[in-house]
Length: 175
Image (cartoon, rainbow, N blue to C red):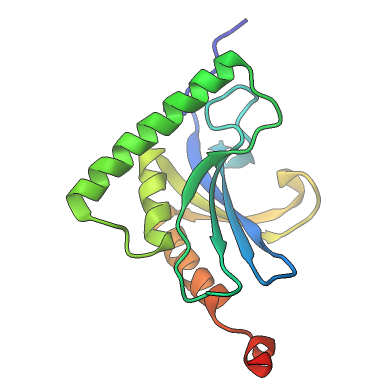
């Protein structure tokens, strides 16, 4: 069996893929950004058993307290994990945690969710941010995407999360 590539291989770019926020019946909003790669301008999932497969930057916006800023959690959401994969996952999470701790010691707490995402992106060596602009089906190839540098993506996340946290007209009418 060949050894899977690592997330630092430079034959592809690591990118952040914004997934559509999900709001539940209690008004809580779940945010998820999936780690993907870009090869020759094409969006691709990490391969099975690659260190970034099933890795997400997640957050939740409280329906009861939307004024509270969400915090970014780096987590895996795998279907199945064997010992080899568990060790890979732990290695990625440990490496990211060390990077984030150094950044915290240098600059303190990140001021908002977007800044937290930027720090995680740097820890994982992500260079691009991807948004689906037209969903054409289950395949990335069937959809249209906007691919920008991480910094532009972080600015977009900041604006989007601010809008998601703003009370809706229904919220203000109920109050």
